[in-house]
Image (tube, rainbow, N blue to C red; front, side):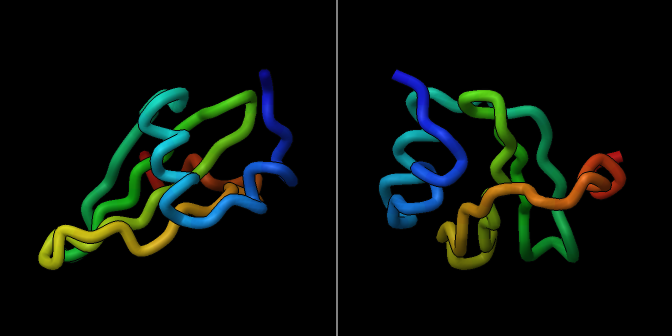
Amino acid sequence: MDLTRGEFSQFNLKSRVNLLKQRGILLASKIINTVYEIRLFMIYGFYVEVFYNCLKRDIIKAELVISKNWQSLYL
């Protein structure tokens, strides 16, 4: 079963994270100011960014990548 971007966006944060853990492929991660880590996943042919607070050890959000220039953030 494949999901579309629209279907994925309807899930709540906990469900999105669980789905990424089960089916997603981690492509890259980057730490910003030693506080935040942004992780880039590919799942079902689209990309999702997960924003993680390293200090609180908590996921803030998991959002679809909309920008076509997302690569520059991870280079």
